[in-house]
Length: 318
Image (tube, rainbow, N blue to C red; front, side, top):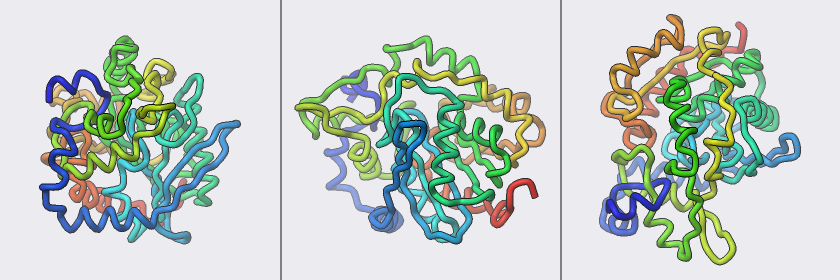
């Protein structure tokens, strides 16, 4: 499928519609998709814009806010969130410019953090929220924890290159030539779905997961179809050097990277303590790539349960 990978921002190495009908659906995936049917869509206003999030779980439990990566959306957590909701009140946010949240003229770490805080307020959670942030999503999470540490009981950063300034600068320099910068309109829905690719490319636990993500990431546009995310979000975003904030965070923090992540070869992993500070544990998820909730979803669930356990019931600043 090399000829298709040049035309599209996201997806898999084979066409989704060629493998979904022939592959057996494992019980954990059946359960995740069934439980996602009970998830609740929520919207809240933020400075005149609309932010969308999806909620699993029930009031009275400690809140866990899941924050997706760049060009993704809340439903990337659909294979993890239902299993965490047994113990937590779980919500997954659509960051501005992605998913069903509004596109804006410009983005920043502060703006995204304000969106996170507004969702937490609308959601009705108090000052014991745990954030789990993947990739690009670590930027708003770190900024929110810096602006309002009293709201959060803990932060898990998952395989995030926003902590690597040189990497982020290289992404901005790509501009419209980046994998996310094309904004193509597809004349046919199935054609668009077949073009879905993961960036960076890697394996996925089951092809049906990619179909699910593609369907939630696609929207009507005139007579055609397009991906929901703002194709210019990378160049329109002020990252505000959030990597400098981590070492001073008052919120307990853990960094989790994929053992086989394309973004974190050993030399990058070795540089993390200097950025994060000695108080932030750095650990690998065995066998996982960058999109660890897709290739190792049940391992992510187990790991998050273990990491969140010390913060379960913990109030911020206690």
